[in-house]
Length: 224
Image 1: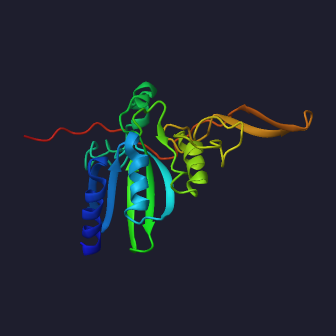
Image 2: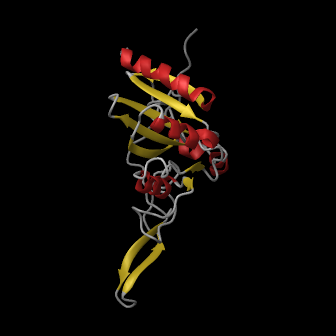
């Protein structure tokens, strides 16, 4: 483990103090977590007192079904045809997804040029149905488009943003395409209508298909 990362962790703990929820080091990288109601004040300290003058990136994360997969999961057996038979997306109801704790996260990647160190900061919005965090445009002006992208793709709201609107999808787009429960086919499709001389939106006509062949076999009970 690099000494510079250990020194950074010590400095962060000293300066942020009670504003810090957790601090972990993995693969020689420091990741901290901040409470959403205290994130803006803590990030201000990261810039002014810790020297992180540059926001390299800001992105959203959806932890829905995190650690679950049809073919690679701790809930599936290691061998046999029963592996990969069940679809977790069918088992999880939409209502339970809306109330899943710590489903969304906003991640800030910070760079200190003067100290040549990096810091990853995670903030989990308290409400899953309407995830809201404070905008950091007042700290790093470059966050403007980053926050619009996270709003567009994940539906995360940034309180205090001066112009929070979609940036990648169309104005008539329905939903947020990087959410794990967003259908791969989308909700609507777009085409040009020659009679109306404009683009029109219609319900999606593509049917979901499963391209992975699945063979269901009853697992043979182990012999005594």
